[in-house]
Image (cartoon, rainbow, N blue to C red):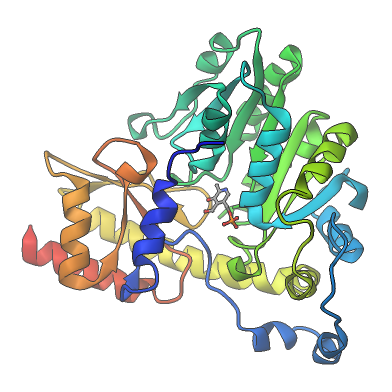
Amino acid sequence: MRIKTFKLEEFFAKYEFNVEYLLCSSDCESFSVKELLELESGALEELNKLRLGYTESLGHPILRKEISKLYEDIEKENVIVFSGAEEGIFVYMNVLLKKEDHIIVQFPAYQSLFEIANAIGCEVTKWEMTDENDWELDLEFLESNIRKNTKCIVINFPHNPTGYLISKEKYKMIFEIAQQNDIYIFSDEVYRFLEYDQNDRLPPMCDLYNKGISLGVMSKSYGLAGLRIGWIASKDHSLLEQIASFKNYTTICNSALSEFFAILALKNSGIILNRNLKIVKKNLNLLDSFFKKYQNLFQWVKPKAGSIAFPRIVGKRSIDNFCMDLLKSKGVLLMPSSNYEYGDKHFRIGFGRKNMLEALLKLEEFVVEKF
Ligand SMILES: Cc1ncc(COP(=O)(O)O)c(C=O)c1O
């Protein structure tokens, strides 16, 4: 398989570990091993007993059980655990798609959600969102672009990079359109549980639809990206079997240590998610004030969920130049929209980290000095 470079990940590989202020990370504040072990008495003793052999390919049964509890109508048999959400996307796309298939992908998007299909040779229709339209998705576009060979609709709510969260009514309509046409829905739900108003939380697609696949991960809302634990949940047993079989060619099984900590974190998810949502909401208010103050320079659609947003720089300025100048003069990293193949005006800003205010103040210094 020949696949294009993953622009966003290459950008991170270049800068993430050598800049002073990361202001575009999508994951929430992380936890130390000590903090996790303190969540449960006896956890350290359990960890000391853990043997580091191969693990069960589909994931530790207790982990699969804990994951299944995140859904209404899903048993542990409906869950396969991977090394990150990324492996789940890769395996799913490879199992489901063949050369002549067509997919429709919400856009802008995390690149692997469409690039793997491109590499397989599929036809890819980008279902584009714009900030002029508050990032709202146009369902008529979806309906009118379905073809005989459309195999899958790829969606992502809460959305990377815009923070857009579709209404429950429209979400249901996507499912109805897919069902009428017998098309799979791959629903990337990795930012689930970061809805600012819990009433806005969408039902997982795997609960709603037999051909619906929900993708989850420990990286984002739980802030545990270093565990590299993600999963797929679905009621489609035959597809799950093929996915399980393909996994023997990627990672075979997951890290025993990571599974241990993922179980611990999921059993105590209330504490973890509350802490992270609190950080996100506090930072969001700071950002909202910032963007109101500098509305001559930036426009933004305030997100409804998640830890990232996708504001626009106004006027003729190039966002690539803006981001590079900012990085050189203040050591602050923003993600220009060129890494999403989405023009030259937007940038991703991340607000899941505790030190966001420090980075924002540096951005403000830059804006005041330069503009
Ligand atoms: C929408 C989306 N899906 C999947 C992933 C991959 O997650 P992970 O890095 O945990 O594998 C990301 C990571 O940024 C993402 O934003």
